[in-house]
Length: 113
Length: 109
Image (tube, rainbow over the protein chains, first blue to last red):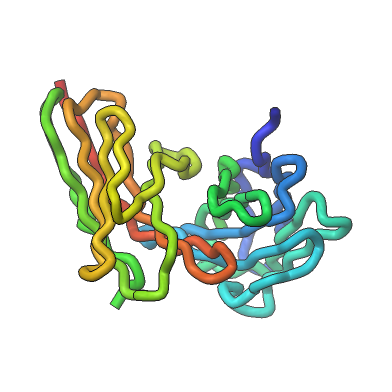
């Protein structure tokens, strides 16, 4: 069975550009989470989808970040316009409803220059 | 104060050593606790759950003290392959994971 997959694995963009990250959760997992690790800091929660609904987006840094999960399958996280402080590793995780065990994707390493 | 605090290390130990990691958390309402392992430039992977009654899985033992809001991980007979960052994780409302910054373990031959 395929795990959580994320695309791209790496992205280098210039400040002011737009980047879209994609996450495909494990099939059948209704919970989908986005997390981020910036250099030297701990992994931090960004937001949580249950199917296509945003359950909790309290961790989103600001309105330059937009997450969607149309149809309740894969999710995208768009950063527009990107700033230098957005650099970091963006992880996606999924889990079954009622199960606290979350499975992580390999992450997207975003570098804004 | 951080929600989950860990000693960042690094812990440099020889093969065969026993090593213990500690973690404290600030939210007394937290209900679930885990240790995750993260290898360099890889994703976090669940190592084990943590219970008040203790949880043992081979060479690994995890323990929770709710009164002290303290979590521990003990690794016996360390292997080179145990070298990684160990993340203390607390689960909050909505199954949101709150991570510590991680403790680096380096096992040397």
